[in-house]
Image 1 (cartoon, protein in one colour):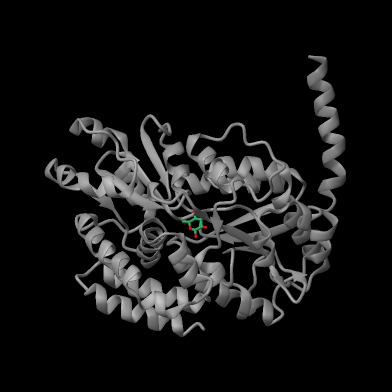
Image 2: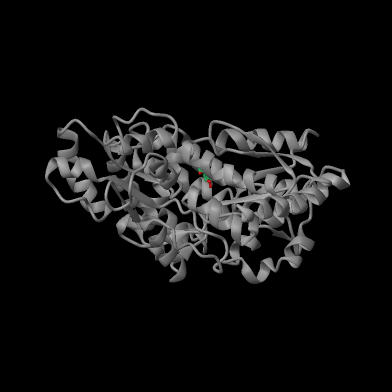
Length: 409
Ligand code: BGC
């Protein structure tokens, strides 16, 4: 066909000048599950298509394993071309130490201040008025994912919120299924607890503790009720012995478990498994109790490389990650929401649409990583894994939790 020839000619003429500046960049991240790999492949594809070369530096074992490796490479003189961190303060010390590339010119040339929503995402990238990261998505952790089949087989309606979920757990258990899937990595326990704070404790309590840093509220009776609920919830997860979050999601996908509290990145796994939102599985933002989402997620930082050619490629990649085309392709696979409102996500599934509605309605709060230091977050992860995986007294856990928070004030 004539058109094909023309297209080929056009591509060749466009591709040639770009190849002249083809530069390899190693990009590190912790996206190793099926859904995550499919999503990151979109970023690599776009970067390669623009004439540069993405060298994939996936690190297995989740963010808790990957981040110390990334940080020690950057501080130890072996920096990569770009690296993932969560929105918030995880890279703060690296930025303060002058180890990260200033992207302010890229941000200005591409109107990041005008297009990126919510502004807190760019605020998290900003230090002393300069911008040091490119946000790529919004991921909210406080979702309950349910296997519809588990409930269909029991002849009971799929729960519409956390309380109904807990009420049906004895029947699920009696049928030989795991009521709540929960992996063993510390961050997963901390995530589940955070979701219960918003779901059960409610938004006012969440804000008092996390924004106002009101330590009386943190030590008070409303928060004690959340700890009691978490102590009840851990019994539902007693038979869940898997390690990684996606193995836990897989228990829901294969109808071995009724539910999982997990971030909306779980959608990527359901998608790869060919499951359909609403038909095969149900998603309940804010655990179906308080439809709020927190605006966590991922951003890319670009360590200084002292190499003008690489630096130019780093800036090209930063601009590309925020571009509308990449935002659509990546987020549809990742199950996350785009960081700009001016892109068309008509192809989003029902769960993503729920997230988009909540975002549009402004029912959002910052993520734990945005309001607490990496150190406090780590202490709470360690506490929460101990709490969820043992019979630790909820009163003692609350007292320790308050101490952890206080260490960050
Ligand atoms: C990241 C997600 C990722 C999840 C599980 C989170 O910290 O924001 O992008 O899918 O970890 O690996």
